[in-house]
Structures are given as C-alpha cells and as structure tokens.
Image: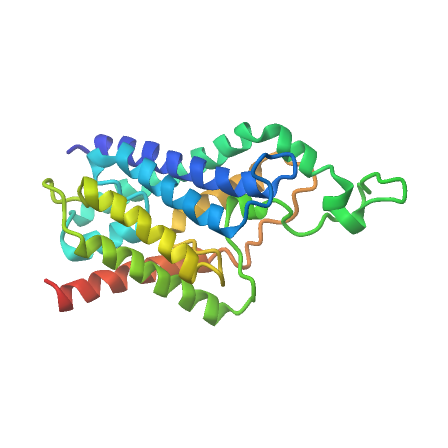
Length: 262
C-alpha cells in the first residue's frame, strides 16, 4: 500500500470520526438542538458509532484513526516505522477537517448559543446585551471540539488518559490483525467501537477520554482559528495532556503486547 493510499484513507476516516464524534457533543450542548441535554450516555454511544463508521471507511489503511494506535501497532510490528509519519499526517488533517464540518453542520446553533445571554451569563448587560469589552466565559463551546478535566490535576489527568488509552490500544492489538497485517478485521472493528463506548462509560468521567492525540489537538486548533463570537479560550495550558497521555498509553500497550502476548 502506497503512502498516498494510507494518507487519504486515514484523512477521510478520521474526518468522519471527528464529524460524528464532535457532532454528538454539539447535539447535546446546544439548546436549539433536538438532542439538547441528552447526556453522557448519548455522548459515549455517539463516539462509539463514530469510531465504527470512520473505521469501516478507512479499512484500506487499517483504520488507525489515532496516533496512539499507530504507535502501538508499530511497536507490535504491524506496520513499518517509516509509515508512522504518514499515518500521523492523515490523522491530524482528518481531525481538523472533521471539526470544521461540525461547525458547518451546526453553524446556526453556534451563532445562537454564543450570543445567548443565558450562556454568556455575567458578561451581559441589564438589557440582555453582550458586553463587548468583557472577556467571555472560558470555553463555552470548547467541549464540542476538545476535552477538559472535571478536576484539574495534571498528574491524575495524565494518568487517566494513559490508562484509558492502554485499554483501547491493547484491546486492538489482542483482537487479531486483518489479512494485510495493518489493523483489526471487520468484526474486530465492531468490537473496538464497543470498547470505546465502555471506556467512555467507565473511564471517561475525569477527563472526557480523549484517548487520541489528534481527536483533541486538531479540533482545539480549529476552535482557536474559527471566527466564533464569544467563544472563550482554547485552554492551551491543558492541551498537552490529551496529546502526551495517549501517546504514552499507546507505547505502553505495545510494550505490554510484546512482553505478554508476542
């Protein structure tokens, strides 16, 4: 398989992953959405289905859709190390494209939400108008694009992302590789999607379970660049944790596989 095949497949698959995953976050967040306040269970299943759909689309490249998975497979020996940058590039571009598509799909909801006095709270005047001189609340829509901790503790947050990613990547490595040696097979893809749902339900509470560096970083960059009124900050002080944690977790999972299962 050529580098261009890998890049295109991973870009499209990851874009669909982020479109559907970010889409369920938007659907639950916006008051003018039919899924408003549907809750955490809806989000976890939405992300599970997003993984399932993106993975089936990107089956040609093995459907990594996640640098942590790519690292784990490289350590396991499922792919060549010189292919890793190609996978990373496609995954990152796809994540950013998916985040932009979420903005397009929910454009009207973004505009309504970010000019709503109830959302902006203390930054509105007595007449209900937004005070342009006041800084908006931090990240009123950031959660649609990227993750954030419920309790901000760098050590705990990093450990949570590492542990959750180990569960994800180790499950992928032990499901068995597809015939081309680069990813799980068709049934395995369904099982991975269910694992993602399980991780969200069981381990997602503390940090929102990024478990994927580009799932967090790509949309966070898009959040910073999009012309959204009163959008708040992009929380760059936290941004390293959902990148570093999953990469460490993917590497640990690959190491565990080599020691325990190879």
